[in-house]
Length: 547
Image 1 (cartoon, rainbow, N blue to C red):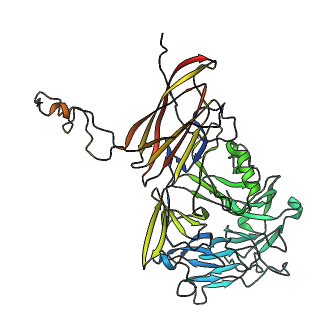
Image 2 (image 1 turned 60 degrees about the horizontal axis):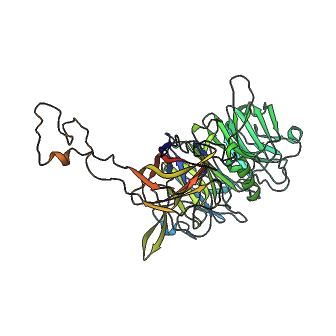
Image 3 (image 1 turned 180 degrees about the horizontal axis):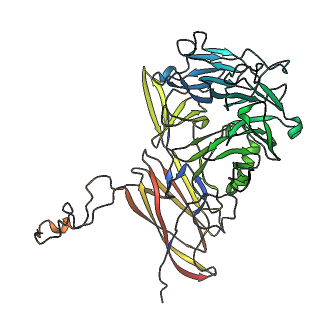
């Protein structure tokens, strides 16, 4: 007697994102073992990431840092390029970084572009390892737009060169000075250029955390957070300056890279040597418990940290609920989705990758451009838009754009095929996709932990994109109104009574071959300028022989 077909829906396929930490044979289909160039929507659907559309012609020199600064009511984008800092004029994309001219430009020798820009008291303050702090006054006053800080703290005998800073609680706070790497300095109230006047001061952390150095400074719920390489110090009363009170020292956990600290809702997220972590207040006690947000990729991200040059950038996109972390020298970008949590109460994770040096070297979330701007490794600045990675060139006095498709590449866990003692005869896979018109989908599968896949099946995505949807019984439907006046017209009724398509949705089917106890599916979608997302996935199989 023939065995019946088994319909096996993969419920919530990939909804929890990437997991490279657990054994893929023990996970359920809500996890993925590869999730590149995708994001997870609020509903959990796996969708293509947006593209990076270049706004200026690439120069070959990475854009190391960016900031949005309000210059007396006008928002401007500042970007570091080589040893200079520019205000960006995207109306002149072929000459965004001129050697001379009217554009505001500030050149500082011995710099690499790895600045930390801080908006404080209507000015832009700029910090870089080994360099005196720089300041942009812009429209304030009548003097030069750019100046170097003039007064140094009395305790500094050589060079006042803080590598990090923060403008908050009415003062400018800085640290990472080469001569005194474990000393925190703070300025006079509302004067980020006065380090010697009344109200200024410093905190020597040698007696607090032993031997360490300041990497970053951040505000958090009325507290001052000082990140070292191996420790974190928390102070109370930062707004009062001289009455700062030590609250807590978190030993053994520090900060890998200055630019990975981001405020997310009521949390502070940062990259430690053991992964992405957070400081999260509780209502039960006035302490800062640690939480590991990268549990599901822990070994992988620790390896990435060890192999990187520690110039790691991040940004939080509030309107999309995602924290983007990029290893600038490795073309490795992680997306931590905070919209929904996994069963471990951690953010869902996917990855992005880029070709032709388009990967991020810096990132900011802007008001001026309503979202993400990316300073690219190839020297361009790009917006997060469309579904191509769009390159800009300047040919014959005109802008020339080239659309480069990217590939969304996802792999499932090892899916058990019913009975553990018998192999299932593979019959068919059914996939429902939304969008992706004109894109190409490649499907291959692996059987029983074999590293060799099947041949790739190519499917051209072609969802219905035109027409007028209709509902049965509505006056505008193809059946017509369900009333006594409905007239049957023999000539048109058969064609008019067919179902109309759900636009953008399409079911695709492909035959599966062979038999397996466990099946792993890989899907690769080559973008074609339109979004695409996976709605549903199911496998048809029947019981085979015991083996």
